[in-house]
Image 1 (cartoon, rainbow, N blue to C red):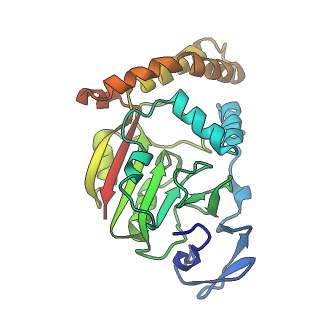
Image 2 (image 1 turned 45 degrees about the vertical axis):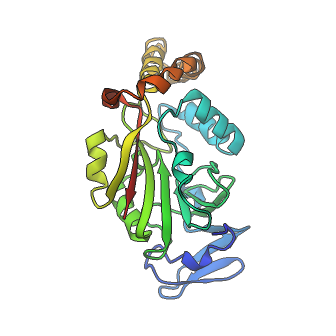
Length: 283
């Protein structure tokens, strides 16, 4: 599926009816709603709605992350050097997905995991083709082969509704690769609401046939994350600004320890304090 030829799978996010696609806009054939179509990007909500996180305790870190996300190569480099993905990664998962499959990456940011993957996010980062609320996916029923969502569900207000939407748009036999955090501190993107245990993920995805469930990021990353947060709080003198500066400094200092996860993630008991879990399922 070409990123430039996705119009036929799109539907109105409000009434799920067919869209009439013009050069600069889309119009719902049923309710008449209009959506912007500009420079190859479909806008199903106003990207200006994106919360800047200005009222959050991690505002500085949020702003830095938002800036880094605008540079796909830098984002990928930092994401995979500061946090070791010792378990099954999305790229490992996609090796078994043939070219030509229709793959949607929800909450993608600027991360381009494969050139045939269609990126959807609430903000038009580089590489994003669809700007939309994930609670109301702008796709027809049973139209998508694969859905990927990495560290997204903890940031949405109603994860159960998002999971139902994923199920709706997947074709019968379609597959998902989802990651969610377990042991991790608060991190706004633009906000942060939920955590899931190993067992909790099975409940969240109870409508899917489980193919695989395991640790994507292991206990050492969880340990260094909480350690740097604790030290940052201790040395912050109750200043949110100092807290964030210390957090950023320790993020780099403690990163080499994360290499231990290539060993520890193989221990089954390590899932009790895993940083991030992954779930592979089938509709």
